[in-house]
Image (cartoon, rainbow, N blue to C red):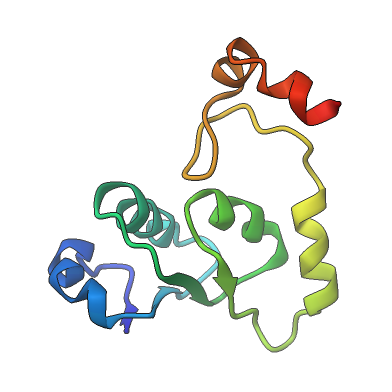
Length: 118
């Protein structure tokens, strides 16, 4: 199953048990609607399967896609896969909360940062 940028994620919730993979199309670099679709699928609707970014997927976007719940990426054919993997190592901490983490101030309060650096 794949969703276009103007698709409504709520329309497929009843079929989650039949969907091992949902692809979300990013037709052009500047179209960010797929990020919202990813967050909705993960946070509001609780989708647990593979969430794959497809289309105009570039290295610069991968970290942000991951923070919105994407766990698979179909890079453009003209992009280097090994270079794209380096995007995951560029930031040691994120300030904002996301699908995969709470905001930095909450992690500090909970002592999680001291645990991670130990």
